[in-house]
Length: 363
Image 1 (cartoon, rainbow, N blue to C red):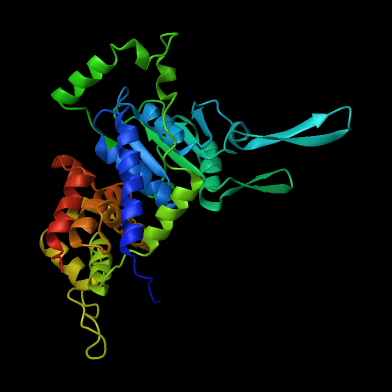
Image 2: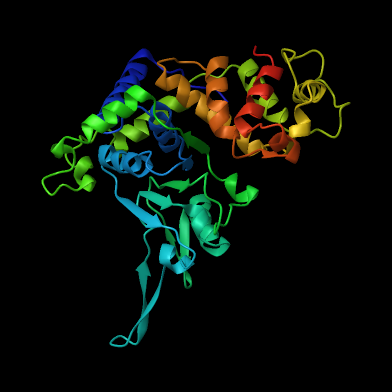
């Protein structure tokens, strides 16, 4: 497949839109640059985000601001143990006057959905939302309804509270493009947060913080989002970078066959490193004792896509190994299942991913 090269004018326009988005978000969100960029990356990539962080770290405010700067419709759903699938997707309502059923659509029929504390609801409800995320449609009764375009789900979960929760199965976690971690702010950022929140204007005349997103400029309408997607598709990825991406994902899998072929000789350029070799090296460095199972090819697709978007955001027309490394943690951290040995040694998924990245040499 021949790629259309990204021209300088398109790159400048895309970079200008990204910079305007960052400035608009920075007016309401202090710090949290990884979260801010991750939201836009997933929106451009057409994927969804699992956001993990303690309460009070501006997760809800960030997605409200995203809706405000895009001009898209936003709805928030609080997941609870008594929630039903129909509460999300909608249901059939009997109308006595017409002696017929009518469809009452649920809150998923919008552009941006905040699924707050998704692990609070049982599997039936989680599956209803995840099916909509995957198929971009909802079936109510005998009729199937397409969801809006764009359709973007941001699901949150609390990492410090597990009692009374329903953890998402690994197969469902794989449907999220990215998993972003929101950490506590630094001292200077927290000082700015305190000062900003002393300003009555941030709360509106009524003193309610929900007014904080009012008046935000729309800098990412659907046309600009489409332009960013088109520009990202034109970012060049060299074959060696593609092999590097696949090798990283392959190195997450405890390979059973260590004698796999190392590639064919002659013809095209010989790969600098193969997935089999990556697995062998990772095994030699003892990484696999920390992994129960690794990432699927869906991770390779996601890493390829996100590396291109990160390169675009950085003002580049081609993907560098640094773009791949920077995108890898958010793409892989929810796709690895760690062993008890990792927990015993005090390692989390980010630490294991760092070891994997160190074990696979960059081209």
